Image 1 (cartoon, rainbow, N blue to C red):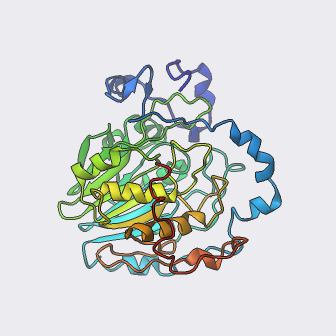
Image 2: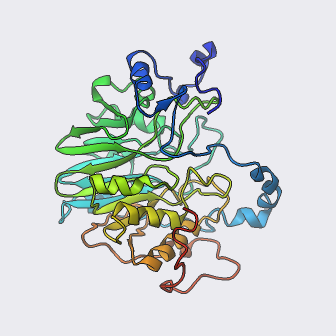
Image 3: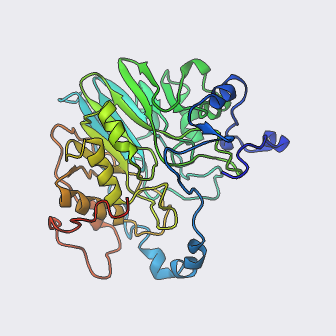
Length: 391
């Protein structure tokens, strides 16, 4: 967070529109009054390093070799569920239905309302059309076909969670945007009317279309420009219609606060938890699959309750681990503790009240490990005792 308190450069007016805008005026005053603001920056609930460790540089030569790169992307096209829109045309029988659109983008139908988390329909998660991580698979449905949205929820302002082209396409609808404190500056800069923004600090709530949405803590960081000034907040989210309860982690490292979130806002019928793009070089800001399962348990009061959907994987290559590893690791870690996970193909809706069995669909297209795939289903002892090893 070095330099977080410095004033914006006059050159900021020349930066490309996808970089967004810094908070100013009443928004900046509100940020300065936040209990989560200290010494000129937003701070995490527990300490976190947001800059990769020096060991990353030393590891680059080995990780740039062809054989190391090959496993970081699928060998064949990722299978996409073919009838998403037809399936969504029928109301959810249980009142709660979840559709993973890839990466951290999730459509949740809850109590007859539609909530879209972290929508990214862009081809790259980058401020530039010619550079940056490119989408590995297409979106399962055109954004214009996804009608009836009541609220769009943003977890933080990184490019793989907040995509300018997607936001501007949604302006023509009447959807409300729920965002962490400070992120509204980007959306207003892109043309979102202020009256359609609900901008929350941690533990603040807003009501939209009969839903209560609460911004809850996360352990991460923010930033879209070249200077990490930490002036917009990051958050996880709890949403309820009074009957069903769901949780979206956004991006986060593991921290003890999951138990507090579960006690305050659970029990959750479904959790959507980040388990991809982890690395030993940035262990504080992203979770491994084992840590993601532990977070799910914490959110459930220590019990294996509800259904966990692994997110933040399969769509963009953002780390050095093999492309299929998050899916494999999540299923194995869940089985070790008796937790229920849903691993739908991209675009396949499911109802947490009657989830489909875990499906290792990624094995159809991934580069197989040198030692071959583990037995399916994974043995119950596969990761016993390792769930909190990296917590």
